[in-house]
Image (cartoon, rainbow, N blue to C red; front, side):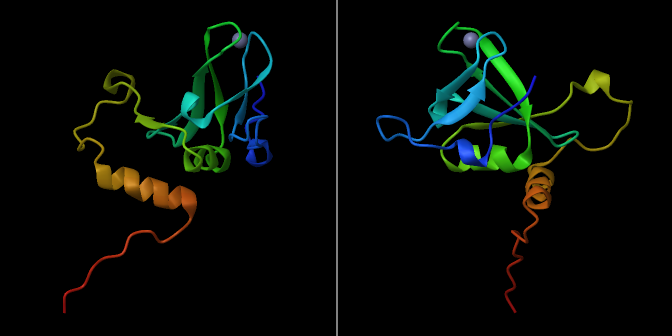
Length: 122
Ligand SMILES: [Zn+2]
């Protein structure tokens, strides 16, 4: 199942709106408004995917994608979710649950930027 969601797919539709080209596993390529495509990142392995309701067949369809296209889709208005594997799938350990700061650090890692500035008051 290939993904064609990529940087060059954010073209203007006939009405001038931005669309994201996605692939329904039952139909074919379909262009959706960014808010109709939900990006998901798994915080356990930093893998990206997206899902949408196909306007042609009405089914929910999903496909993996890469950080670049995913962040681009988010930048044009696609909603974003993070999720983690259920705890019972993981090895038993007593470490702390994932914190928001961990996710921020992960996103910094993905974007390869220094996006955390520590304020100094001296
Ligand atoms: Zn479909």
